[in-house]
Length: 199
Image (tube, rainbow, N blue to C red):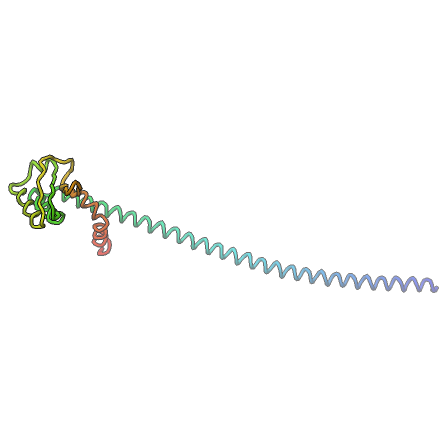
């Protein structure tokens, strides 16, 4: 082998060796990059999976909360409906009282709402026509016991029942419906306790 051939062979060997080292180094770098990429992908997968699980849990929690709210809203609406029905039946029962019970109740209302001043009491035309004997005198006595006086108006008012008190031009609506409306919250609480808390 000539010196030139040896030189060529040596250059080729060195080039081959350098190329193999470069390839080996590149393979090592590629393996390291693949390993890092896999680790990164595993971390991202875990993070995505964790977030997905949290999203599902949050969604389920919101759904349960929403269903619970709808259920409570429907129960409340049903309770309010029952309470309204009970109050309406109570109102109808008061309207259906006998004359004696009805006018006795009106006297108690006069005692409660009469003021210690001069005033006027007005009834419906139907009630004026059926006032019991001595009722006007009893109203006067009741008003006097409160330090005032009530004059009976002979003009029938357009009301279903109860009466209107007038003091100094100011009217107080003492109809049964007005009494029920004024005490609606209080009566609703009583009905709620009787119907739902003792059941």
